[in-house]
Image (cartoon, rainbow, N blue to C red; front, side, top):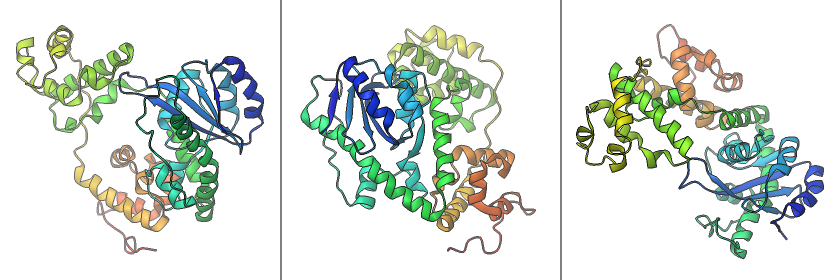
Length: 364
């Protein structure tokens, strides 16, 4: 039976059980629709095979859990946003041993795969998902919500053991843990606003001056959204900023030439935006227009997936693909280079350009 904790005294009383655990299953329920930073509503914990502990994050300060979450090995599923939330709430980097979603990518299942699908595949259990879109800010929480919240951490220990057994059988435990460490590092590293523009669709097509405008507009949008704690798209979507950077309107009237322009941008934010357009700073480097080469590398990573059983999305993420094209295979983490193999390196740096060595396309 799960325990709902709504007082600091009850949380402190649960600490000895959590401190004794050899493994903690962790999950969160949060809302992210109306803020820049997701708001934690409920934190679910399970110490080894004990009863789930559900901590009401709206009623109880979480600081007493900082030591537990950094000293005990944690297992989560799809943990990046959970880690971001806990890092912001507690100011610590949680001690994640494994993410079952990432581990599944090293177990021949693919990536990313939902928790319910993995539980069905590895444990033969069908999970209830009736509260997926529930309002977790309402109090009191219903029995259905509490049951749903407890189920995820109840199942994680068994799922962890089943997936790790498969990962170990394939010899990929160290690589899986390296991939999780990368994910945790990304989740706990402050974003680089000056490079956020690179993720805007079509950015590689812009001329130098337009690129400078987009870089400065996106950096302003992200910084303002963070400071105001509002969703980025609620302030200005990528497509709108791309249009402004491309057209470079000279006044608010010209801004409104785009019929989808949000009214608040052409009114409250017009002076700021026009000021950015007037002096956007030097243009950032052009993005490589290597779509064809990226498509080829993506296809080759799929071949490596067939050979190793490790999901191509983990072997060669898009960001690493760009670095490989710019810097060569040495830009990759060692575990990726090992799994992709010498054939991949020969393919990338071969004397004839992008070429596929004999035998590389053969399956297992």
